[in-house]
Length: 419
Image 1 (cartoon, helix red, strand yellow):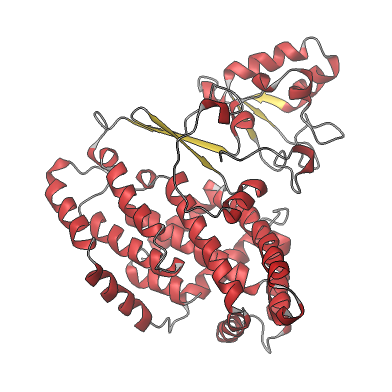
Image 2 (cartoon, one colour; image 1 turned 30 degrees about the vertical axis):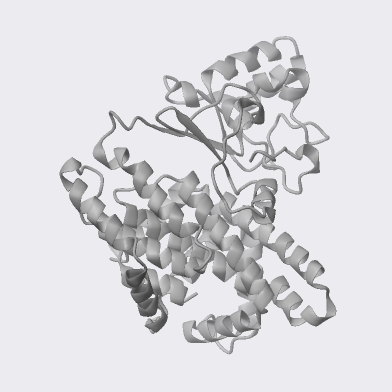
């Protein structure tokens, strides 16, 4: 994020569309003042900016509605913001000024992480040669000095569940950055550890469990238990195809009810490519067989590349999305595992990735790597915009997993081994 610069009109997929944008009270007033001296701008404000039902919320005082084509009404013909052009960046609402930066604070330390819904952030994330980590930066890396926080923890006053967040997250991150594990192995270790912790450590717990918490972390710090867990993972077989059934069902619901979603055309292309190879209509055994065949056509170099991207996505999730928003760490980790299973389905099923791997011998390693990167960036940022930013949709998925008793390690293994 220290290197990030908005590409503005050069971005391949402008972020100023398809979202209902929150507008804080302070910058709502500044936009009104700007509109008072620009008649055309005032007309747009009158038509597209509306005060919310709960105006007492100063952070979500108003909303900017998109136009009929889904674009922000303040974009000009060059796809640049009229508000910033007629005023400056200080006029923009906090959402627009800060995106794709996500800001949190633990005690006196403010953290900034990038949202992968931005293509340029995803590109920088994938291209970095450094191990993902938090590094010190100055305020000059921000577009302006005032910023909004997504979450804040005061570890001296917070409930025990939040107070121990920095310690537990550090344990999770140490697994996520380990070069000796694949993304699937990392997820299984994370799910196992979080499941053990969640028996005692959850929303509403108190410091009486401190000794148990420290014991679990110490127990998991050794290599013996990790080797045993990974052996168990290797031996597991998803005989019921639970993982694939779940992922296919979620995508089927998504494309049925969200036809205008930017991810829908890509999912449709993938589903149609499967139907072309199937004797019956999306029969799960046939789907599984073809999916396995497609995974096997992915060359070793491309597989390593995709694994790296999935690991970086995992690390980004752990930093950007705090598990304390869930009742316990395991439920949080299970949802990340499901989302990664969905991403694997998209990556390993993508017709273009399949085609490039089948003709790998015709291309240089550099060309192949670059093409796979371009395809992957598109998949990840569209997935982030469509799925990961749709809180209501993910909440429905989460509720379904709870109802169907799928918040357990057997389901975790099904998500990992089935895809």
